[in-house]
Structure formats: structure tokens, C-alpha cells
Amino acid sequence: MTITAGALATIEQAREALAAAGATGTFHARHVGGGAELALDADAVQVAASTYKVAVLLEVACQAVAGELSLTRRVRVPGDVRSPGPSGISSMLDEVELSVRDLALLMMQVSDNTATDVLQEIVGTARIAARLDALGIRDTTVRLDCAGLIAEIIDDLDGDPLNEDRDALGAAVAASPALAGTTGNTTTARDMTTLLSLIWRDEAGPPEACEEVRRVMLQQYAPHRLSTAYRDGPKIAGKTGTFYGGVRNEVGVVDFGDGEEYAVAIFLRQHEFDLRDGRADAAIGAVARLLVDHLRSTR
Image (cartoon, rainbow, N blue to C red; front, side, top):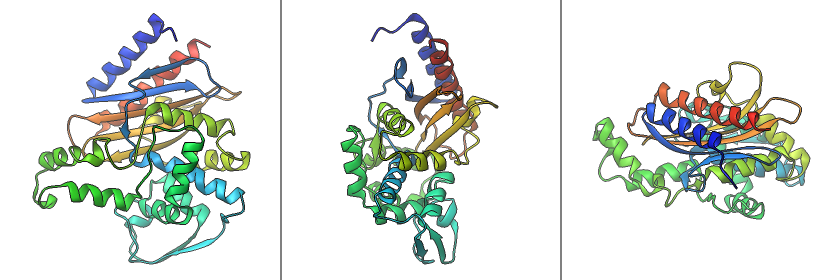
């Protein structure tokens, strides 16, 4: 594929936006229906963080359509079953009972790790991986749930992480094989836009399953990354991914209506290790807008 001067200029602007936010990154953007695309190291293996939850949701929806699982099935989550995480059931103290469908909403809307792990146990990690492989998503690896991933990183740390200062802990976490793209759950920017495009074209599974994934992804509550690309207008369905140690990601679809839909995947690595970093969050939205605006201009 020939890269135009305009595309090269846009990629360079995006790279500069990341650098100004104290980060490097990889990205890929494409029209859902095919055609032009923009990329920077789009096939480099990245830490998926919570972006892998899109694949969990797809497996839940497909098994439901196949009659293997009911979305209204009630699931009891005891108070002593909690995966580490800052949101949803992970931050609750008491027993809860929810439907499979509402567990999936919590997994995507507020990136609830406990809800994710409960669903992953129900549908099976091997089934999630097999579906991705069948779809040709071959550079993505799903081998752990959230609790397993966090436990693996803790095992990689030398000494008691609670005794480390912030920068030392961030550097130690970043050096963990699970955050170096060699173990854990990994993906690429191109794989994620491929998966999203298949879902938005009803080709990742039965149309009813793809519609359910889209419905849930449109309800993500994350006003600080991809959604900052456009103040108003297009619908934005996304999934963030964050991990201490400099990982800041988001994948999603920007929908202007009438079939004008763009899949975007942006994976950042920060040079510093703050949990809250508005510059890096905003850079994801800025890069997404650069990429999507260029693709729109070439249609």
C-alpha cells in the first residue's frame, strides 16, 4: 500500500502528540468497511491490559446466541471472591447477585475485574482464545484472567512492592515479563481494529451477538481518552486498558452515521508512572482525532 505525503504527515503529528504527553505508542485506524488505514508499529506486540475484555464480551454474547448460556442467568458472587481492581464488584465488600448480562456491562462500562473473571470462568479462557484464532486474530494471546495477570506481575517483583517508592515500583512493574509483551495477555493495534471491524460488520459471530457487543461497548464510562476526540457528534464505543507501569490504551469505534465508522486502537507507554495523567489520557483522544479526520478526508 502506498503511503501518501498526507498520511505520513498525520502519522508524524500523532507521534509528536504522544511525545508531548511523555509517551511513545503504537496505533492503527481503519474504516470499518475496509480501504485506507493509518498505522504506526501496528503489528508490534503490546500489553492488552483491559482491552482484552472485548474478546471476553464477544465470547459471552456468542455462547448466549448459541443457547449455551443465558444472559439473564443469575450469578452469585460471594464477598470473599474479589479480583484486585478499583471499580465495580472489585471495590465492593458484600455478596452480590447479578445477571450475566449485567456482569458484562460492569466489565465493559467500568472495567470491573471481578465481573470479568467471573465471566471468564463461565465461558472458558480456552474458548475465548479459540474464537479469536478462528477469526484470524492470531497476534493476540488471552491466557490469564485479571487476578491471574496481577498475581503474575506480583510474582515477578523482587521484594515487597509496598516498600518501594512510586518510581521504583513503576519501573519494576514495567520490567515484568507480563508487561513487556512476552507473557500475560497481549495483542496488537492491527488485531484490535480487525476484531472491532468484524464485530461492527456482524462477521465476528452471529449478528445478534455482534449487536450485543456493540450495545454494551457504547455504554463504556470513560470520558477522558477516546471520547475526548470529538466533543459532540459521533457515537463512540470503546474499551480502555490501564496498568501501573506506564500502560495506557484504548480501542474503539467512532461512528458518524450512515455507515461512516472507524475502528481505532491506540497503545501508549508512558515514561513516568503516574496512575492519573491527564496529558496521556488526552493524547489518546488527540491521536484518534488526527487519524480519523485524515481517513475521513480521503474517502
